[in-house]
Image (cartoon, rainbow, N blue to C red; front, top):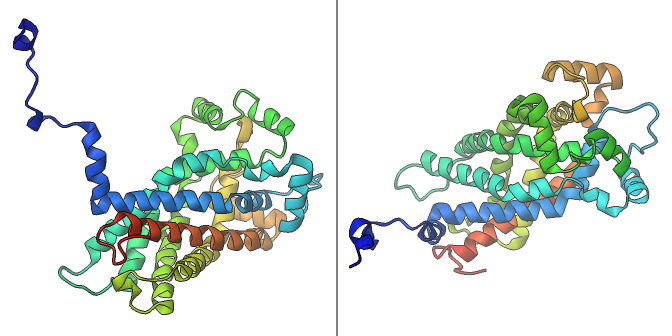
Length: 331
């Protein structure tokens, strides 16, 4: 043994925690499998629905008198493609795509953990729908800590209507997700990234109760016994997930309009238009009528059906593939 080894002996390998050993063990566990499956579902959802999400955000914004942008979804899609190019429909996708795996994994993992905590010890029966709703509220509330800043950056990028407007609004050196984050933090601090957080919590808590509750109810309705044996078909996953997404958006859509407006304000350092949730509701209703809170509902429901059908299908199929406890064993 050398002098160096005598002074600094290598520790016994049995007592060393190697970071590289963590991931195989984590992914082999139930928690790791659910976490990874949630991430796969989130990425599938973003890719399936981002163009319609861009249309939703544009339709939700306050009308500018001189604006020539159409007020219908199909008209706006044609307008965006003709004036900005087809890739404009994918503006702001990098931010949610880079973070959605973790965000969705947190949401689904929280739902799974709360579901297990609320289930009766030793019972083989599926969780009651009341407890499903409670677990959904908890999961929706927890994931807002990640969702709020991601949504804010995405919305700021989506409302830039062309390259010249983007350079003017974002002052060119900020014209990107990271540059926009730096600018917001410099001007408003970290709290600037959480503008609209209160509205997000109020929206996502109840809507996730509807979201998970509808999914569990519809998939059991379409495929009796699947909540116990996990053997529902792909079509059941797609329809159940799609209806869950559409109904959860329908129940919270007016508040989503308010949230989008709160997060879109102050872009490029402009002064805020609204003092808070109630002021945004009163001001928007006074200026544009009560119908403003349902503007863009059509493309939102269509997007929600596509996105959440993809999310739940990717989630369930990933679980089947990754989990040795799956009834089917493989996809």
